[in-house]
Image (cartoon, rainbow, N blue to C red; front, side, top):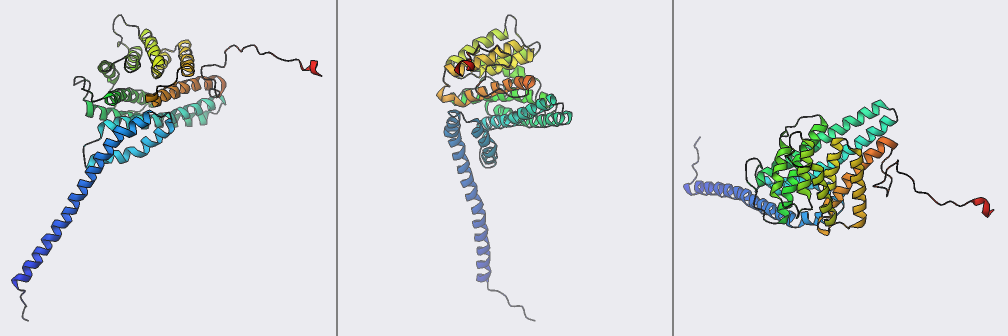
Length: 348
C-alpha cells in the first residue's frame, strides 16, 4: 500500500500550530502568576495599612479572633506567589493563638466547676481539652514568633531593627509577646512543640529596642515579668514589682492597660494573691475612670479580657461561678456595705 506523503508546507503549519499553542498555554501560566502576585501584593499592603489599624481601633475581640482564624490561610497563601507576609503573620498568629488560649480558659473553668461538683471524670476531661487547646495556642504563638524573626531578625543574632513607622514598632512588640506566650502555653500544655527554652531572656533583652514611654510602659512591664518569673534573670539592684507598678501608672494614664496583665501574671507566679487582687481592682477602677485610647482600643480590650479571665478563675475556685456581671474588681469575701432597710411592719 502506497503511503501518501504530506507536503512540507503542511508539516510546517502543523509544527507552528503546536508551538503557538504551547506558547499560549505557558503564557496563561505566566499571566496567572502575574495576576496572583499583584493580588498578593495589594492584599498585603491593604491589610497592613488599613485592616490592622482598623482592627486596633475596635474593641470587638471576638470579631478580631474570627478574622484572624479565617483570613490567615488566605493571606499566608500569597507567600507562594510573592514575598512572604511575615510582618502581617505576626499579628495573625498572635490573634489566632489568643483564640485557642481563650478556649483553653473556658475548659479550665469547666474543669474547676466539675471539681467543685465532685465530678472527677468531667473535671479530667475538661483538663485534657484545656491542654489540647493550649498546645494549639503554643503552635500558633510559636509560628508568630518565627515570622517575627524572619521579618525583624532574631533578637539573639541581630541589632535593633530600623522601624518604618509606629505600626512596625508595635508589631515588633507583638512578636515579642507572641514568643513569650508560646513558651507559657507550651509549659501549661505539658507538650513539646520546640519552643526555645531561652525565649524569655531573649524577649527581655529585645524589649530594650522599644521606647517604654511611647508604648504605655509595656516594654518595661514585659521585661520585669520575665525577671520575676525566670530564676537568675533579675539584674542586681532591680525590683520587678516596683517596675511593674510604675508601668501600671503609665498604662493607666495612656488608656492602654496591658501592663496590668503582666503584673497579674507575675503576681500569680509568685503566689501573691493579695497583690493579684490589688492589680485586678486597679484595672477595674482604671477602665471606669479613663477611656481606652482611641488608636489602641483592641489592646486595652484584650487586657481587660485577660484580667477578667484571671478574676473568673479566682471566683470559680471559691464560689463555683465566674465574676458576676459588672463586678470586676470585687471579690466574694469583700465586706458588704451596710444597706439601709425599711421595716415593712410600719407600713401595714
